[in-house]
Amino acid sequence: MHPILLKIGSFELASYGVMTALGYAAASWYLVRRLQAVKLDKDTFWNIIFIAFLGALIGSKLLYIILSWPLLGDTFTAKIANIFQNFRYGFVFFGGMILSVASLYAYLKKKHLPILPTADFLITALPLGHALGRIGCFLAGCCYGKPTTLPWGVVFTNPDTLVPVQLQGVPLHPTQLYETACNLLLFFYLHKAYQKKHTAGSILIRYIIGYSAIRFVIEFFRGDYRGAFILGLSPSQALAVCAVVLAAAVYALFIKETKHG
Image (cartoon, rainbow, N blue to C red; front, side):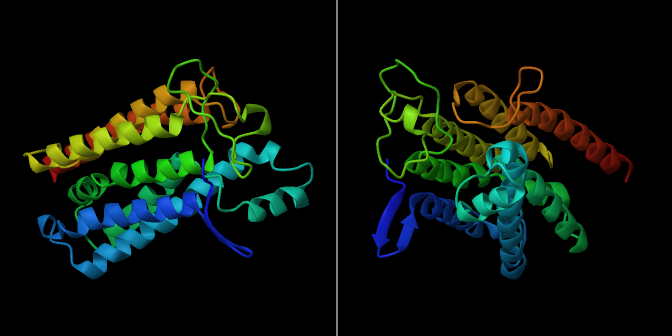
């Protein structure tokens, strides 16, 4: 597709970075128009956005490095060089989500803000930003799918694409666009659900279950290396299962504390 949107001399404007930035902008725009719903002041809100962004960037990159370590080079020096040379590509969403959630939990506790209501508010916008980010993946050629004979298979031929040479020119599942479409549907569902009366934490749980199901299914169509499989499941599929179980357990704990608090 179009990994590089603009090139002037040695300067390159990567489509992945642009779409990721647009994703954060769209999610922030959606939330900032609704701050009164949770009575957040703008300073606190932008602190939250910064923490979420930093957690997502660091966490997703760290998990990618862990899962892809065997492929990054033959020596430790080569692996480190590869990481910095290709830093703008190679992120695993679940890693970013885990670190962002942990960081935001600590921040909300420090500020004495209600955990579940605030989480419900913030999580509604996540699939909107994620949907735009996946378009960046499509343009860059990362997170590509397996070969397919279906009529909507996409062919990557750009020399800067991240699709391996042996798969360039071959129709592939547009897994990035599958996830974009599913995330948009999830966003509209959460948007409607949040507007209705709901138990604190229920929107967060719906997101975790919804996205985990989306990712679990789409993983079957992915063709890129995503780490060693565990009991027939990719790392992301295993994390998806764990996320659902953990979310349900944490939610039950919060409900129990609320009843006895």
